[in-house]
Amino acid sequence: MDTVVLVLFPNRFATPDAGVTDVNRAFVYPYEEFDAGSMRIGEIRVDGVAVAATPMSQPGVPDGCLLRVALPRPLPPGATVALRAGFETVVPTRFGSFGEFEGMLTAVGGWYPYLPALRADGTWAVDALPALADFEVDLVVDPSLEIVLNGRHVAHPAAAVHVEVSGTHYLSLVAAPALLRAEVDAGATHVVLLRRPALGPPCAGAESGRDYT
Image 1 (cartoon, rainbow, N blue to C red):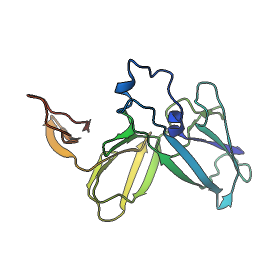
Image 2 (cartoon, rainbow, N blue to C red):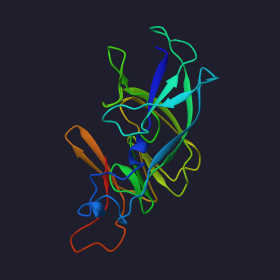
Image 3 (cartoon, helix red, strand yellow):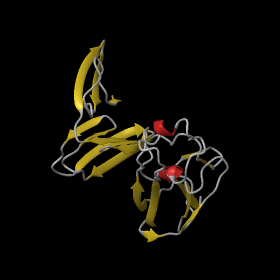
């Protein structure tokens, strides 16, 4: 192996989606105007050596979402390298699993560059789920926020948050100024439900908010 591929998921939102029309625009963009998401990659190092990266295209994958990274030397079977990449992600004002609206961030995976799964034939499965991976994360969070990172809830952290997550496809992050908590037991399963408080006076007999387990 002499190259690896990085997936830059936020660039999927860099241009208007053809599927968004006057009929459904209000259900995608809160202010009914396109807002771009993006990911910019800075310096990439492999085992401490700066390496070159070039855009990669593949049918069915939006432009800008794939980056081919050259290894300083071929990697034989069973060997490992450490790849380090600086990046900056812009989350669009948008409803759904990757967006921000009125102070609440929802990023269900893909807010960081990731390696796609590697097929048995040596090709990268860029159109499939990422492989199961272990994550070790340090987050510096505005102390006015509460966060949920793959099920771990931290309210108004005064210092950097360290989280280790094993055997998962995605690292999901939710942040908001406040989250309401409810707990219930269903047989042997304990369920914790976190949701944002209503943003305004609710309609009679109804409450608004998003739910996260």
